[in-house]
Image (cartoon, chains in turn yellow, blue):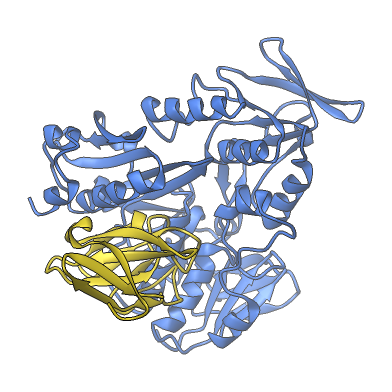
Length: 105
Length: 410
């Protein structure tokens, strides 16, 4: 794998329509898998308060913050309404050989 | 009504959210946000937690600062209160001597802490504002004895904060257990155990007879003859809706300012939202409820903005509450008292969830306690089931191997 890509997890380590937390180099990320097996990654903490999004619920392409139900489209990072108004950073994802790689290096 | 002149009375979560959402939804008329506090609108949930235990200096958990409100074209009158409303003339008299006209007025006046009624009660502090929180922060110094009267959310969150700062803490609760009005016993038991593990003394069935100041301390005398000498006493015994202004204006009051499904008061030009408002809830056969909750304030603020601008829906968001104490999170969706049949679900890692079904088998509420990662998704799914008026099988709810998500499509 080219420079900057980090092996994050097995592709079946994330359930369909779900999210897991991934920590790397002092930062925390959230890795998502859609119902049709597309993978996405964002920063791991909600932009409203420092809460791990991986503890929240995935519905379609939306991740909801577990604390205050702030919503983001995890494909684009777009904030979808109060109380969140700051978008999430997103990160490139590749799936190869049953592994999920994030370009965060 | 996009050009209407709107006054919002109260600049807390509900009022501020209404102002911001009115602009976001295209309101172009004048918008005045009147609040008696000097600060920018701020979130209250951190006042019992982060503001007290956070690193110095404490930071106001602002929702929108003055610049952001100005960007939204919201005229903010800070440190100003509304003294009277003339419904016929559609004017509001302000404490700064001015009288403002309105087309639509929104009451978001909140609630105030209930005061103890006993000799020496004035020695007890209460929590509602940022200043109250700063005063508690100053009092919660290592080694000090803190007595908290009331084992509800506020009292217990303050107990956890005081312990985090190294205080010696006792909670005095009049009922047979803590969280009596909020969660069922199995969940309250887990919370009580966590407090005791942290070193908090919890006394239930305990009444305070009176308080006296002596030698720079506050002596708390209990009904059963017990005596506790405290450095600081805090009362967290509930809140009273702020309805004075509404009542004086002749609006209908019913455990808060009574509003209809569109959050409109008995005067069609006046709405009421947040802690001060009682409204009929469609999910509970129109039961009139008044919710002291952050989420309700936010949802009411957004809803009233849409309602004023002509949307005709009825407010029916599932009530939702949360509390954080130590590493424990509590979340509740729905109104537990409306579901007499209880089903338990073990979420693992010490986390417990209870479902509350009504007599028709409909899911009325769910409550859970445990680590955030164990409970939040499940409560969110329960909330969706409640909103859909689902009648899930008790056996499915009780079985951790049946995913709640699968019940949504049932």
